[in-house]
Image 1 (tube, rainbow, N blue to C red):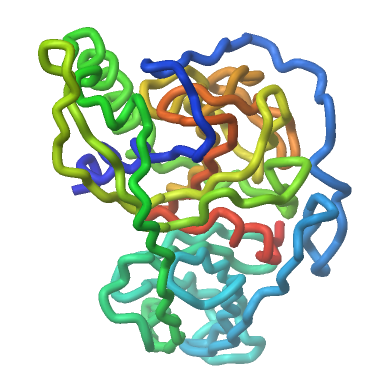
Image 2: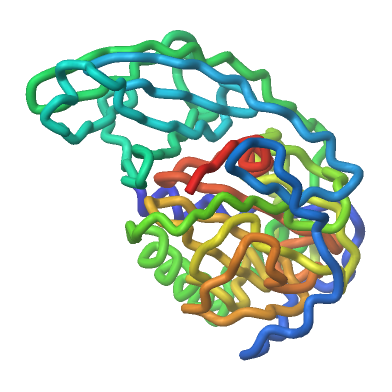
Length: 355
């Protein structure tokens, strides 16, 4: 099921400005990072333990918070909003003197019966969970904490979100012209890209996040929001004539940020670059692995300034914006995936991540 998910999640990241090229445009990669031409903003301490870099235009949002207790532990839950499509950050700490923790028992955590990956630190444990946009029944959800001799169920309320719907039909040359996608060389390229994504995004590596979070651009302007439902034009060319096909719709699994070609793009979190190359849909594509199945992704770049295997810090330059791949104009398509679930990447900016 996860392979099928990754087969479609990257195919629909486009803006609305016109682009005359009929084929996806490739980004030019470099082996060594260039000098950083700008800064995403000053790192400021919005929380006791976290530093966040934001452009002046970004409206910082303090997170919602819940405090839960059970099995001798306290669980603090933070999210920009406890709602569908958001990322939630959890801190688990022992309650001093609680009988279940007297022997130093290790906790296990489950969200709706699915295991949550915990990172052990000096003060306790941290984790992130995906509040999926496709959650079938938002409302009260169960967070379970277990030790070898105790189990406790706690409840958090996840709000329903009415995501935007766009009825105007979008024409994106690399997606709409089905003739292009049936060429053998194009199909082979798409297949190679997909095989690499399936391998990379199936891995689970160690948590590398730090207490620094950064906006990925020098200015804040969303040109297409997260999880908007969008309609796409489809046609084929037969004997030199355009033959219309039924249109199709897809959810925008990331969001688009305004960026002119050549403007800088920065990593949102500390992590390891796992993809840094041109792909059919994504164009100049950089994906950063932050461990525990957490990935941020930056698409349509005109120039890639990092290499695979390179460790990058939050706020470090990773590339320059462009209109490569399946795009109709220059912009940054930004995505966040946790455990294969697409989430609003801007939710990271409101989290009090602690080392």
